Length: 470
Image 1: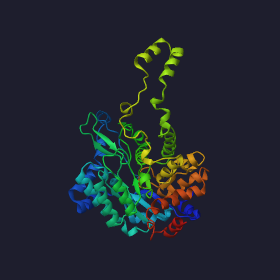
Image 2: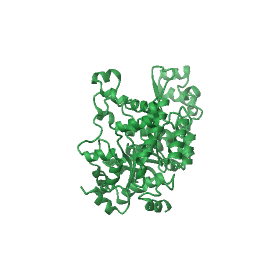
Image 3: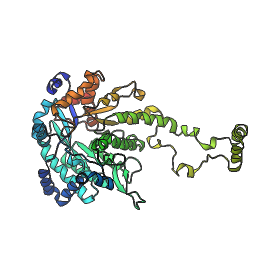
Image 4: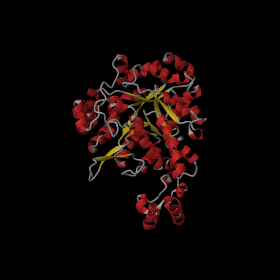
């Protein structure tokens, strides 16, 4: 395999890692959260990891009896101690970026992923506030080549707005990670304890003020939520069963809600990214949305409206072909097809695409392909699907974002990530131009279209400025 630094040297364009991870060193993190946010912040950190710790402390039988999934154990590489230290120590990562062939890195947390999900209002808000201050302190000296993602709670628009103003407006974060697929309790439960709020459709709150504040602050929302240990990923004995596809499933649910809820129609200036789930699911969703619009749009529903049926003709045909029982049933009870609110769920608008204001299939392409971005890891061969214009409707090329995922168990050698991603070019599955879009053009557009000054003062400032002004 070609060395990452050598590969970077002959690419002719920068490489932006849109989804790396840093590992928080627990003793230091706990002390920092207590110093900044007090007991509630520490409480949230402990709650964020309690599900995993609790499940791993149980036997398989106990997890089965309690409806809990086998969780991840040994979640970070240990064979290469230098790589492990690199994930923990920002200065070491900064010094090694050239070795990895990476010019600029966006880093997401690890333990911090769970903090915005905690179902304790006081603890969640305090922890997000404190964690963002801690991140800013650690990474500020390295901002020309590394920028961390602020964690934004989303249980209510008010808490999201407050932390956006704090993290972006006061501290100066340029990247945000927003919670999604929020667990909300049923009241009364009716036998089911909670439901998932996808924040774009049928939400408990109106999140438009949040998207508007993102637009005002110039930040592109990113989502980094999985579905492991939920619904169909509840094996009490097999982590791989629970892990495969869980990011894709969560991303698809939220992306679909954002689209059908009309968020990209109302906020065309914003870009949204769904990380670590790849792009294959997005290709399927894009094609499925088009297919469903063609058969379920307002005009297409006329082909299934029960009022269209000619009762007299149906009876005539039944007398000729249906037999005595069918004729008797039609005469006695009429046609089984009925119209009215009792048969359509009492919804106000029968057009499921009404919030998107779709007039042609091209509108779906503009609202989906142009606004959504998808984080892809280096070892995923299905990344090539995004660039297959012959296969994607309307000749679309979906927006992929190169994510190294360094720091986590699936990256055994940090210096091997970029060459692994480049294998798609070597195997002639994508072109060199496609690869440039994957590792540079798309990340620049994703963040730079929302904030033209995003890359100012960074190691890729000149190239990014040229791209954005072109």
